[in-house]
Each structure stands twice: as structure tokens, then as C-alpha cells.
Amino acid sequence: MEEKVMLKMEVNSKLSPEKIVDKLKGFFGESGLGLRLEDESDQCLSFHGGGGYVTATLCPEGSKTRIEFVTQEWEIQVKNFASDLN
Image (tube, rainbow, N blue to C red):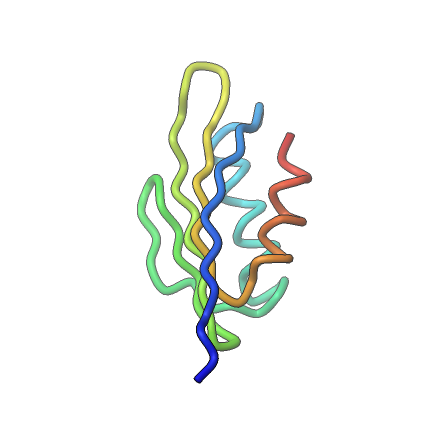
């Protein structure tokens, strides 16, 4: 039986939490990769689909926003998305 790999990573961005939420929805949501937005709160979004998930938790810290990602099956896409947040 194949073991599923999970990725946890953290990045910092100069973007506001609101802009990051918009980018997350555009990239991972129905108009982007087509994942379903299963759960959303002020600081956490969780997308599901394609046999995996992407969860992003936003933590405002002064003039920056720290984003914690946890994903399974979408590791490459999360890394690509995170690299554009700086």
C-alpha cells in the first residue's frame, strides 16, 4: 500500500491577509485548480479535491503575514504558489 506524503511549510509575505485570501481562492479555487473551498474563517482556508487537500492558515505579524500551509497531493502547486507571495 502506497503511503501518502504530507507537506507542511511556512512562508512570510508583505501582502495583507485579505490579498492573500483572494490569491488563494483564485489559485486553488474553482476558477484556478478547481478545488472546493470546504472551510473558511478569517485566518484559515481549506480546499479539497483531486484526492488531496490544501489548508492555509494566515497569521498577521506586524507589516507581514505568515502563511502556514499543510497539503497532501498538491505539494508542487503549494510550493509554486508560495514562491510568488514574497
